[in-house]
Image 1 (cartoon, helix red, strand yellow):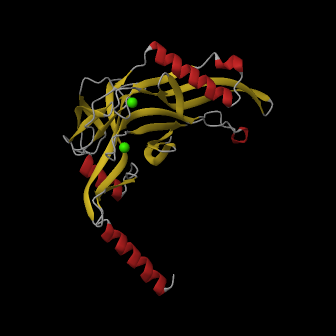
Image 2 (cartoon, protein in one colour):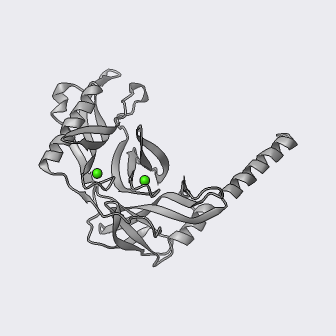
Image 3 (cartoon, helix red, strand yellow):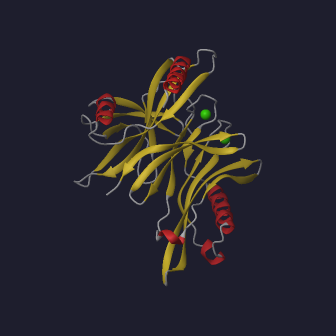
Length: 300
Ligand SMILES: [Ca+2]
Ligand SMILES: [Ca+2]
């Protein structure tokens, strides 16, 4: 890099830093899940999803929000620094469920992610929750419940349509499994939306032998009057050349308005072959879009 180019880059970085010099706060959003410890007892784990920096621009009263990845679990210095700050024994966080505050949790042991829950919410299986140190998040009224029978029928109908579009055989469409289907209220209009994870199996002949392929589907479904439609569909396509019959599964963690525009963002967990990460979706005019992908961990 030439000196003048280096200087230009430094000036740009300095201007950028000055323009965002009003960092009001750094917050962390965590997932909360149930697991069974080595003794087979029920435990709850806290895992960082995303770091939220927010503040005001020097030239505008409109707040800005930047999303960044937390340090990856390990012994390195960034993680240790993070763990000392956020995983101190006895430190507590707000529990968020259904877009609003629903209790709290406390770190059980220094630098460990096991937590004690103080809530009526039943976390476990496909039911995750969020936690955060942010004071301003989770002000909305909480809405999160199991679907009614008619909402279940809506979910299955839209799942069938999504699978059909991908060319899944009609006979297989009768075997759709609902992994998780949740009624939420993303925009606070007292009318629920549905967030669902589905699965279906098909058999394909691959490299001379029959293989069962599981097709995971994730959908956000919204009502328009009496009619429902799929506002977002994620249906990973099986690609035979990868020899990989396990496609990534995606589940709702929870939803929460992160940027204060009164429309909640949707936070999901993506599981793929012992590795996982999180996604955050925001509703834009043209539809739902991924605004963050990161965090998580795993491996063997
Ligand atoms: Ca709604
Ligand atoms: Ca929002």
